Image 1 (cartoon, helix red, strand yellow):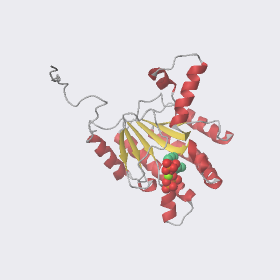
Image 2 (spheres, rainbow, N blue to C red):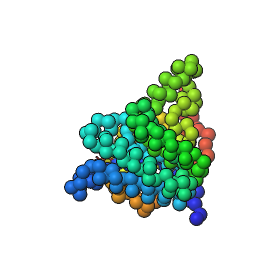
Image 3 (tube, rainbow, N blue to C red):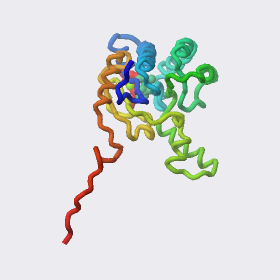
Image 4 (cartoon, rainbow, N blue to C red):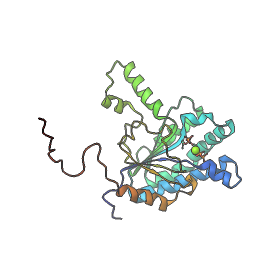
Length: 242
Ligand code: IPE
Ligand code: IPE
Ligand code: MG
């Protein structure tokens, strides 16, 4: 397949709208999360086919503990089940899994499952899939700073960048949020400094290949300037001061 020159190297997604998807169907919210896993599987496959190198998804935020206990335990269970079920297909597709987030609050069973899945896929190189789980952008900045301070090292932009939990990949080029909300909700606060933002009204379980292609096409029409000017830098005519 020929690739457009402007294909994003790294796509990040806030997979939002599972609860509303379920509620619209008079189903429990956890049914929406289950459907969300299906949507993620489809999106991973589509990303591999399109030649995306890195996909980062927000699966559970530091603040999602504030949801009803039943929903939180449903999400934990779903993660454990998905880990057991999805690894063979990820292997076949050449996907390398990384879990990003604070693991200290996760059960031993879930933590062990994460470590195992990472190890099993460590040699894959077609797509890096970062699953942000019990992750928050503020947590990441704070843990990176605390680690540097504990080592007595200076805190600079580049040392912090390297101590951050996403240091193994370049910053996201395109950040998509599904579900209609236009906010970051504590996702990649540091890394999204120059990401192109794309908000979709689609609920995450309905976000299909065509919707992904729509986001990639929109990215292709953006002009990224990174704080500079567009085109060649022109010599500015300064006003004459008397
Ligand atoms: C996103 O869907 C998934 C998680 C936060 C775990 P939501 O559960 O937030 O769905 P809505 O926003 O309530 O529809
Ligand atoms: C962001 O969605 C977190 C995930 C998708 C995992 P939320 O539904 O938690 O965000 P808010 O509450 O609408 O800001
Ligand atoms: Mg939500």
